[in-house]
Structures are given as structure tokens and as C-alpha cells.
Image 1: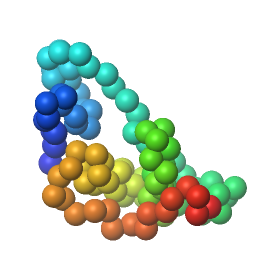
Image 2: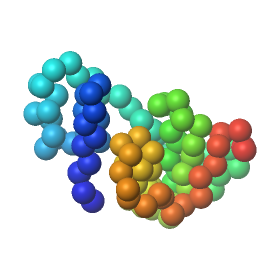
Image 3: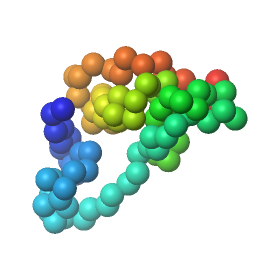
Length: 103
């Protein structure tokens, strides 16, 4: 998957990777968790054998899934962040998106 770096007057945003760590030394920086990628929660009526991406840590009431594998969920997470946070023209995730209020 391509590395996306969004640059604006307010600074840079990107999905952290060790390869980009050097960018953190160019001004004030912070690292923020965007989501949790975890197996389904039966309390939320999710399949415990599927994987879901929950963006609640970043204030977004979006859950992606179900995904058959963790790697699928991670790929969907990256697509969503690139499309909705970094503003790229990549395609939106293919998986169903639910608001937390729908549970």
C-alpha cells in the first residue's frame, strides 16, 4: 500500500511507520491512536470470529467490518484513514461501515 503524507499549513499527517519516524523531528510532533483492530464483540452483536476496526479512540463513530482476517481489517483501516483523514482520492473501504449508534 502506498504511503500517504498530507501536508497543509497546519502541518503534516501520516500513518505512522518506522520508515517515516524521521519526519517527527521536523517541528512539534505527536502520535495519536486512530482505532482499535480487534475480534468481534458479542455484546455489540458482532461475530467473535471476525475482525472489526473501531475508530472510537479518534472520536469517529465508525466501525468497519466484519473482515475475515486481521490483515483484511488492517488494510480497510488504512484505506479509511487515507480517504477520510488524509483526504486522498483512494477508494473508500469496501466493507460495511456502521455508526456506533446503530448497535
